[in-house]
Length: 101
Image (tube, rainbow, N blue to C red; front, side, top):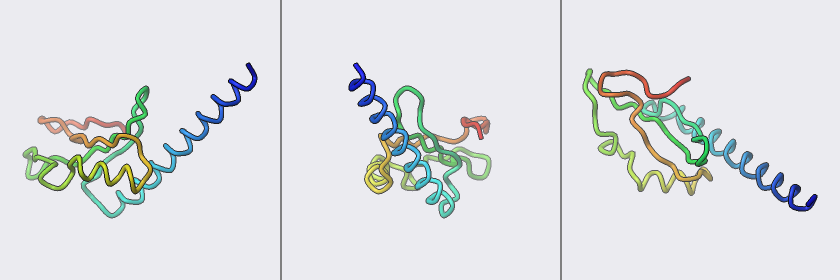
């Protein structure tokens, strides 16, 4: 029983450390890319969500046109040690933010 609890504790610690490293790496990258507005780890799934600025001249844009595609998500997963990166629009069609600071 103690061995099982120890293994679970080590796994959770390693996962948390990896998630923190991922968020730190994306934070450093976001300093260079003004389109990235927010990022975080989704509760329950552990997926990495990156919110991308999707409003230009009061109109919504397609973020994939600016390179935020599955291909870029895979590169972030490999480069930044993130889990299942997904790009989301940062704002609704009415201009309301979809993320909390």
